[in-house]
Image (cartoon, rainbow, N blue to C red; front, side):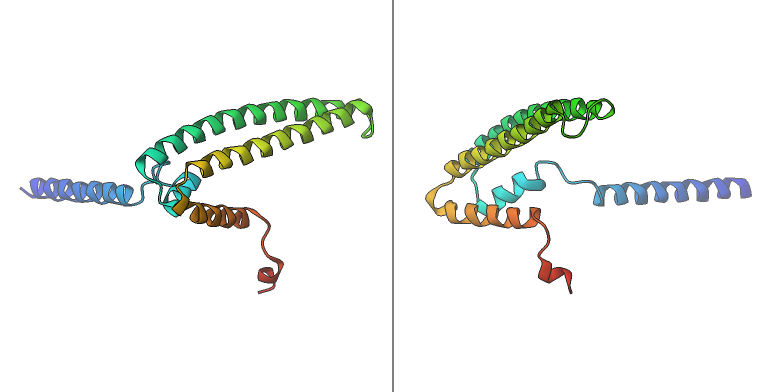
Length: 153
């Protein structure tokens, strides 16, 4: 009879531990990628409607795919440049050409991102434009280096 009581207590304890674990995992689950990040930040900041969000999401997917292409090209050029480290001097023409290629790729990436956000801005209604511009300004400030005045505090 004592053994049966022990097993009942053990089963109840394990059930409570399982429920507690599942509750903890449910409460602390990672956010849905569509609910977090720059996409949702801009959607919330501008108050985009469903139709605007669908177009914006499509533009975002296209932007990501193209950026991935640029990043792969950048990686290939960088690897080629560093392979020359063992055989060429830092001021060799081949090294300079590859460094210039990296700069050109980065410039293309930045222009492409600029155009992407111009397209997203074009999605906005006139009443959303000011909020869009403020959101972009806030995003740019958060991406930049910290303000020197704030570091001294």
